[in-house]
Every structure is written in C-alpha cells, then in structure tokens.
Image 1 (cartoon, rainbow, N blue to C red):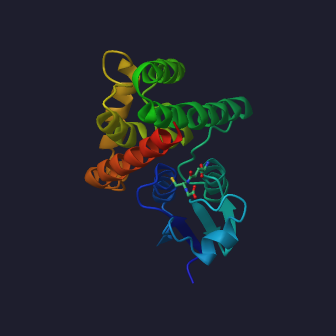
Image 2: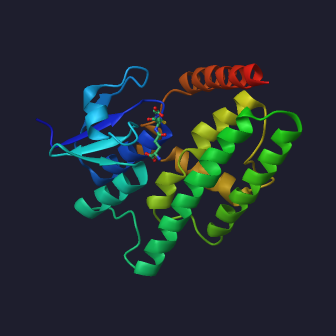
Length: 224
Ligand SMILES: N[C@@H](CCC(=O)N[C@@H](CS)C(=O)NCC(=O)O)C(=O)O
C-alpha cells in the first residue's frame, strides 16, 4: 500500500501544484485519477465537505484543500523547503497565496465567462490583482527568492492554464507589456524541467475550457 496517494484530476491546476511539490521534495506517490462527473467513494469519504480534488492521503489519512496540502507536505518532508522559515515571511507568503486563489484564479475564470462591458470590467479587476503580484517580484527571480517556493507553485497555473483561458476567451491578462516581471517569471518557471515535465497537454486544456465556457454561457443565456 502506497504511503502517499494523490486523488486528482489531470486537468486541475489545484492538483498539479501538489504533484509539483511532491516531486520537488522527492516523495514517491501513487496518483489516483478521479472522475469528477461520477465521484468515487474514496473521494467522497476523504473530502465529505467539499468533495473536491486534490486530496492527499498520507498513510490513509486525508488532507484536503491544495494550499493546506502544500503546507502539510512542507512540514512533513523537510528537503527543498517551500515556505520561508521566518514567521512573518511565512504569513506573507500564505496571504498572497490565498489572495491569488481568491482573486486571480476565480477572477480570471469570471473574466473568461463575461461578455461585452462586463468582460472589460472583469479583466480590469483581475489586472488590479495581478498588479499586486507583479510588485512581489521586484528584485526577485522567483516569488520564493532565488529558488521556487510555495507561492511559485501556487501561481504556477499562470503560464499554462491562464494562457489557455486567454486564448479560449479571447482576452489578454498577463503579457510582457502590462506585467513584465510576471511575464518573465512565468517563462522562467514553466521552463524548469520538473515543472514542464508535469503539465497536462495544452490541447486537452483548450478542449476542456472551450467546452466549459460553452456550457457556462448556455446556462447564462437560458436564465435570461
Ligand atoms: N480550493 C480548492 C479548489 C479545488 C477545486 O476546485 N477542485 C475542482 C477541480 S479543479 C473540483 O474538484 N471540482 C469538483 C466539484 O466542484 O464538484 C483547493 O485549493 O483544493
């Protein structure tokens, strides 16, 4: 029986960050692909509150929510630390991670779905959030400093997932002109062999987001 298992979905940005962390730490794990349209007993029993992936099973004990899983991994496996040791810096990294998930992931997905004037406003609002992250990169190679850390993994969806969202929804959120540091960081991050080697194929993401967007827009249209 594997000591560490990840219940995940191959296209999920939340799940990929967990796999990156485990690989970075050199932890062997078994990956269990979940069918989110027909959730397994193991998922429902392991995450009865949200019934979402990822779930980390460590010696059969479940840990849910990707940011908490990253922290757990960092505490259990000490090699290649993800979070800063300094309590203040640690709190700051957690703050930006929560901010990024609440404002940037959700904001970008909201902007994808919006249309017309609503889309312009949504794009503007996410850009304001990205501007805060751009500032965090001033004088730094990575969010973690010289090496990738917690916040880099949390924001690691930008070069791959956001890029697909931008293509599918015909919008531009992060490019070299508006966010040069974030753009440069994204290029650097995605080229790291460990990161690059654990990404879902772009074509699958394009198909997934195209279908999701069509579905969300049809729901919206039927409500009017
Ligand atoms: N806040 C959660 C978000 C996880 C999440 O949204 N997972 C999606 C897949 S990307 C999911 O399991 N969706 C299934 C559902 O909503 O029923 C985390 O960080 O782990």
